[in-house]
Image (cartoon, helix red, strand yellow):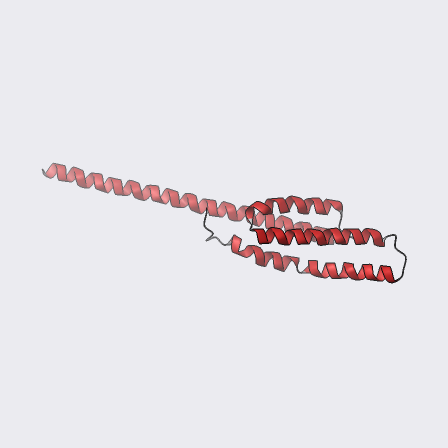
Length: 150
């Protein structure tokens, strides 16, 4: 009788240890997923900000800047919410506006039309200046390490 009680207790203890180990493995796996998701999101955030910075470090927005921005935006579509994707679509429109106006300005003579075009570029550039802060604010909730998986 004593031996059967010892077997039952031993089985229960081993079962408890096995359950605890399984739970810790599951928890570690969940933590790893959260960290990997953070890494992917942060990488895309950096790609977006590098692309915008690159576009404004030279004279004008180039088609290659738009292509790089589009590639990063497509990644962001699957890592962030719809509000971030909508904001990035608005940013893209501004980049296209800046590119188009800068291209037109090269051939535009001095006058009222040129002054209006220059004012449009200035307005768009001022809006783009806020890009970093606004994007960082929008993605911060997604970057928290407490983000739930699934």
